[in-house]
Length: 309
Image 1 (cartoon, rainbow, N blue to C red):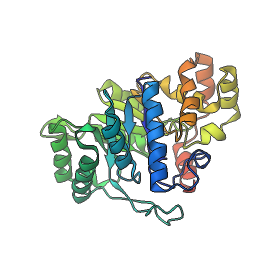
Image 2: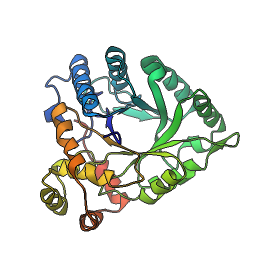
Image 3: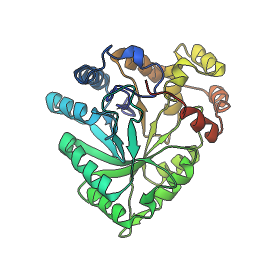
Image 4: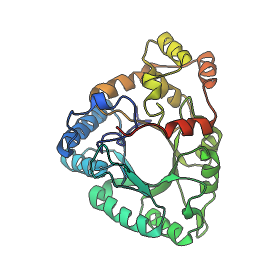
């Protein structure tokens, strides 16, 4: 259970791209409604033994909700990670034309790091670049790199998350970054699921090199729970679980994955996801699931069409 984390991307704001989340959220999705939903989810996750909580500046009020829960509940042995780089601009409107904007600049980093510190205080354990890609200005901005290294010197682990079809290349390039002769990043958070496995070898290398590897979107934004390939349904049936638990079990089967994030939005959804802990996939089943991987260009193109609802 300690390898699992709870991600707050789908509960900190009224709209997101996860399939199947709407039915599990409060009907009105006001700020107070989603605060209560987030606290209920965090209570259930902590009671189940989950000790990693993941947020981001762009997840609406996720950091605010998490910070309030941490102050009220005062839990022990919790790792809190967050991310900077995207700003939430949806104004709590489900039908907003734009929900978040990306900017990897020194000014954005400094302002968002201060905001995160205000909301999470010294409970912040890991701070990551949000959705680093090969074309990010961070790779050439030595002043930004030096500023990020300052947080590491203060005791906060700094890392990066990745997205897009060039995850593997981005991981390897980011691993090579150094400031004053020291490796800049100590964590990496990447998309991996049975449909999108292109970063696997790079993530294995990162783990071997000592980085803490975090997997996100292991259910492909809900698609593997509600619309899984038939072969995945069959393997899930053979293991007497639903496809959501199978998808999580597949991620947990990767020994190089240090933390696997779950994107549940309710205690009931979390309980269903946690049935993954009872699944042990054999070599034949892993080979069946491996054949479901699609080219990353296709995966990310299809992901880009998911609506914000």
